[in-house]
Amino acid sequence: MVTQRDGNEIDLLRSSIQTTGGAIVSTTLYTLSGVIYAFVTSPSVTGRYFFVVLGIALVLRPIRGITQTLHKIGPEPGESVDAYLGVALAFSAGYLCLLGLVAVTTSEYLAAATVFDQGLLRVSAVYAVTTALAMTVGSLTSAVGYPSAVTWINSVKSSLELGLLLGLMGSITTVTDLMLVMITVRLAVFGVMIVILGVTPTLPSRHEISRAWEFARWSIPDQVLDRVSYNMPVYVLGIVSTPLAVGIYEAADRFGDFGATIAWQLSNPLLTKVSGDTAADIDISGYIDSAVTGGSGVSFLVFGYLLSTRDIIATAAFGSAPEQFSTTVIIVGGINIFRGFWTLASHTLEGLGEPGLSFRTKLYGLTVSVPLTLWLGSQYGALAGAAGYVVMNVVVGGYVVYYSSRVLSSTLVDRRLVGQFVAALLVESGVVYGTVWGVTAAGGGPVTAAVLAVPAACLGFGLALGSVSEQARVVYRRTCEISSQQLRLRVL
Image (cartoon, rainbow, N blue to C red; front, side):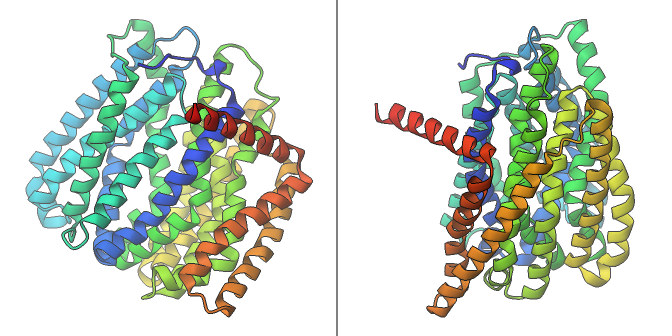
């Protein structure tokens, strides 16, 4: 059983560095997963799988909203994690039962009108339960004061999933097969985590129910729109386009979204810290701009990498449609700089107790982007998804800045740091281009060039940034300190 910590007791820089370490592993595996799914099965099966599991994730977003309440209020000094866990479990159980009743009642219609036949519907029900389990365990881990552990848990889960898929290649041929592998791994990993955390839910008091309701009444719709905004192109293309278009877009998104996904992972310690500090009346203005802007830095690195490698990645990953993949991945990679920023900014608003403002930003973005994607989807496929995604992120990012300036008197943008990121990106892009040219000139294939370009991108961006940014040098020194401490602990 772990020792619980309040959010204001967390060292944000240390927790963010540890989170980034796990996020690099988990996000790399997440990025590769779409390609591996297509390799093990087929692009069409992968597209249908994405449509099914992302649909389930959307339906379960109210559970994410209530577990986000656990994450937000649990770390506050004087609040009971056990009681808010009780609230989350009671809500989740009731909601899952309601969904089960609806599914049983409409099973014949679902089988006739959608991809959910009777067999897939039963497996989807179990998959939904394990998804709710994953949401709860992740939020609970952050609520007890260990948000950086979430990325490492996901790293273990993803490693086991992809390892099993590759080990069972040849016998995994359908959407149901893929889902059964995910279910098995989730039950094993998150079952162990429940034992390690050792938190026992308790009945909440009137105060705890009231606080949970005040936050969850906005957090639940906010989390629904968060999922819709993230996967909007997949949902729309799944209706108006083809499974292949869905597969191309989602695989390209997983490459282009690498940096924004790490920013999303960094929002775990940020939300925990802001919640704890705000409840303890600690001023956050001294670190919040640098934390939000700095957390978006990996998105700049990823975009610089994609500028010089998108064509070779497209050749290796989607040889059947390289031009669509290449164009989609560079559009998504560029706009995800905005997404990384507004993801962190939105979690800051939640930590301040303003989930309603976060909800409005996504509502405005979707109001503009969904009609555009519907209109273009049947003709342009994955490219239409990318266009809608761009419009949505620009609108959401603009409104996040507007609401942040109202609540905090700050846009959460560290302009000097942004300029340093752009300079480092330009240097990195040149280094990566030279690396790719050298490898291909020496006879190396696209996979080899893409792999060797990764360390070149990290070195080019990291060294350039460190030469102009004192903040970056502080992070580098602290990373070395933490790494050496962890190494000594393992050796001893």
